[in-house]
Image (cartoon, rainbow, N blue to C red; front, side, top):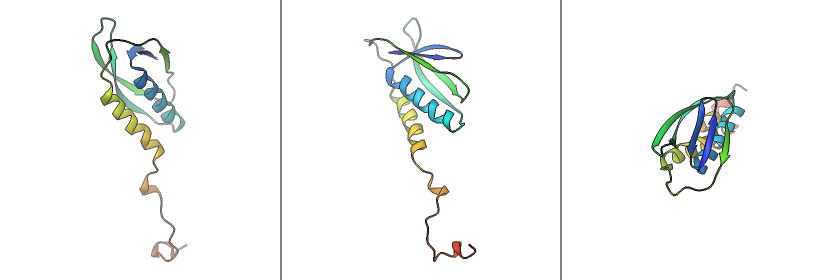
Length: 110
C-alpha cells in the first residue's frame, strides 16, 4: 500500500495504482494534457472508496511507500484504465500519419 499525496488530500491505494497515476500524470504534464481518473482508495477506517482525481500539468503529486497490507484494494479496474491511457501515449494515432506513396493523387499538388 502507498499514500498518494495530492493538492486536495492524501489517499491510500496500492503501489501499482500509485505508480500508474504518477506515470500517467507525467505523460499528461509533458503533453500539456488533462484528464480525470477513478482511483480505488481506502479510508482511515479501512473502507474502500473510489476517488475521482483530476490530473493537470500544474498540480503536484507525490507517493509515500509503506509496507504491504493483508487487505488489498481491488485495483484491477483502475489499473486497466490507467494502463490503456498510458499505452495511448505510446501508440501513434494512425489518423495523423500519411503513408508516403508518390504515385498517390494526394501528392499530385505537391
